Image (cartoon, rainbow, N blue to C red):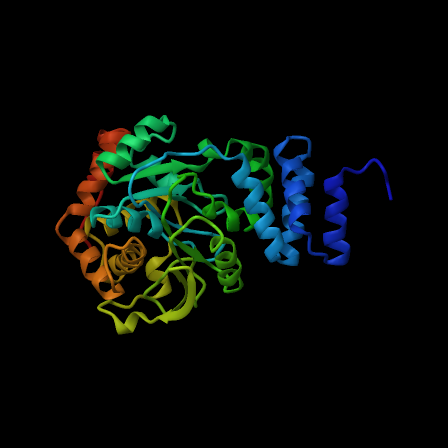
Length: 360
């Protein structure tokens, strides 16, 4: 063996040539090397690609989770229950910002949300891209973000500000251009230190159990991991979604069938976008009640699940009714305006608003 190779390169060779699963400790070690800045972008990209091509094991996901959380900057503490809504990304189908729209609607329905997110690594528009486009300042100090959560019931935690060592990986991640283990783990690492519940969407059914196994050992009181059976990393009204639900220290598995609820069914093409401009428009229209009902209802469904884990409702059907009412009565629109007024440039939001039109 060539002694000039770095320890990370040795691990890459094992994964590639032997299809070996790394132990939890080896994975922590690998990411500590990466976070230290001692590894090249080529080595980092090779490591992430090798794990993705092999398929990430439970220990590799847990080791990555531990390494990322150990280096993060905490947000809070915040009094009272706080939830988050996010997807792991990586699906071939690129949707508008369903989870961000659902976060706004959830906050408008009375449940406080600390939305954790980032720019898109592969698609046209991530949660940070959308919020920046409508006027949110991604570089605000924690004091302003805490004040927004207290006053508005909603804030946005831009991932690079709380995971600064991720900058050592950003070039490699963009060069790789595929879903990696960091897409899996990143959404699990909300820096809010007393987050109480989380809705997490995955685009691969194998991740349901893997993520549930990681999160059941976290401090969350409730969580829901969801997989739409047509490949979206959200709950959708296009088809059934398989869910693992954690409540009262117990895991349960069930299907959410949209046809069993007061929801208008949609087609895949209704929810997908091709550009950042389309993403911003469709996300805004779904929040403002301007979108066709089948588009609004995918946001309603995700907000309903968030309200369920946030203890605002006892049944998903109750959450659907509450979320829909808070779109129709303008509360969701008002919450987004309050968020931008508190955390950014309201004139920029108003400029975007002037481009919107009701489409139903």
